[in-house]
Length: 219
Length: 107
Image (cartoon, rainbow over all chains, first blue to last red; front, top):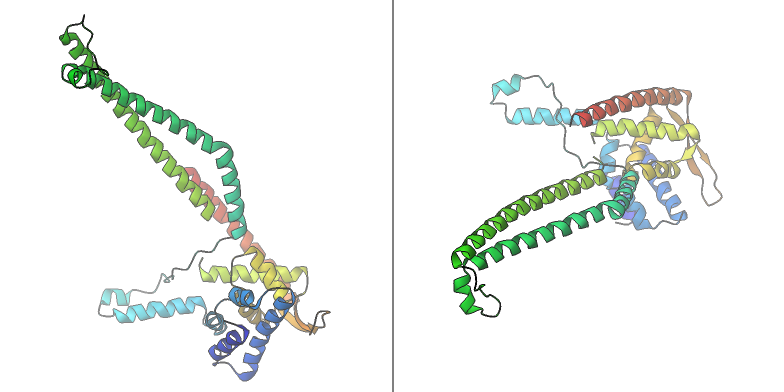
């Protein structure tokens, strides 16, 4: 939308006003755009920042928000007037229309920068250290369980992978079997433990990220 | 934000800016929209309404850059209203802060 379209639309939306009032209102926007252009902004920027002319016109047309909310309430009440219980209820609570939340962009940027700095200097290393430790634990747990399994099934596996797996010749298989089962169980326990650690790690990470987002959004 | 509340806050902002010095519309709008995220267009309806309430007077003053600009000047009524609104605002903020602090503590 350019300057002319903006002013035209605004003028048309202000049809309820007298000629004089309309001129008076439009003057402010003409001056605003003029000075804005003088100070180096583009027409597009200025129009964009002013917002929609229909919305602006609505704000001039009196009708405070409470009145509008009351009207909305009456409309809703009328549309479901069959329900007598509701119809007789006095309008104690005004109906609020959900609006886009608005926040201070400056403080939001500041919060983002501060958080970003804190995250990079501090949090990320803790995150990496814990992540690496957990990864190591997970690998160790799987390796222990795997070696237990190999020992348990040594008589079957040895002929298939003669180079990789060999049975100690001076040890009866019963002992190897018991050792294998024990190691497998140990590995499995270790796996379960690591699984829970990773789960809590993920939960904490998730909560931390959520907290970050809530700070940035300024709520 | 509740628009009724926002309107009240914007009124206070307009009056506070004009209490410091007389402004033309663009200057005033800039001052406010630098700090609060709103469409520039929402300020002028407020200016017109407050003008109608007699909170300020307007005068035209020549500028070096071009045609004259419409300046807004706070009246005594406007000044008093600003003080009242400011007091209400401070009470509201400290009240809200108290509630928030307690709520965070109980979390």
